[in-house]
Length: 311
Image 1 (spheres, one colour):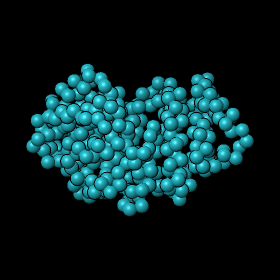
Image 2 (cartoon, rainbow, N blue to C red):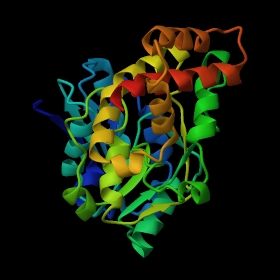
Image 3 (tube, rainbow, N blue to C red):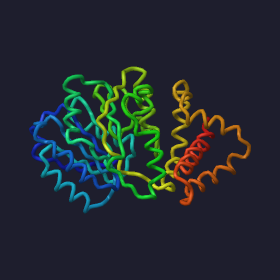
Image 4 (cartoon, rainbow, N blue to C red):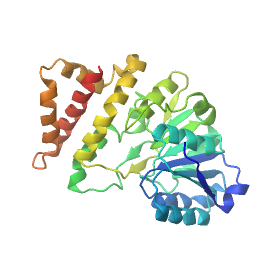
């Protein structure tokens, strides 16, 4: 386990926050996000703190820039710098342990608040309701629009950028650590599973466990997901996620069996020679000459074909 280096600003020492914003990052520069959040500092009056964690980037220049930025922030802020990578689940558990408030807002470093009152909305919700779990949603309003990201944009628009009323119909399914509020007693009872490796499903699996014990609130307080990927990068993440999907299926068959990704994977499992057909799904998804909807459909099929091995 890494021995962390801690940097705190002057506001940290005297603050008594009710909400801790937890931001892990690896090889990203969260400086813009920090500036956007700090613009809300005045009315919050020290009730919201920022805990930022570098999960082993190893970039001394970035560490220096962020340390300087942290010291100048009006919001109470702490930077934790690790020398080696701990991974998504363990890193978020460490962040929670470093926070002081009774409610924790997990926010990915490549997010950008869509409202100038983003933190105020979360802070007011904590003050008035203190929900066990709440997800604010995310959008692509500020995300890059280059053609190389068109397939990911199409997939995210269809499956992830969903309004609160729709998300509430399957509350555990639409939970991502990109914009997620968790009350501390809930997190202490149900932390993220450190056995998940690579990319994907650790947040949804966590939500499945939590939803069996507490209600999951959905609201429209979105932030933009800036980190769109090319088809090649996204396909690589799907390849990493197959093992995690298998873990979810084994633990929560009653829930995941209702997901379209599971049902399609079950159907594809019966296709003769699927392993030889699967690479062609990926190749078509990467074909820039093809229409974006067709490429997105092919990439969804590719993901389901990967998951077929887990069902």
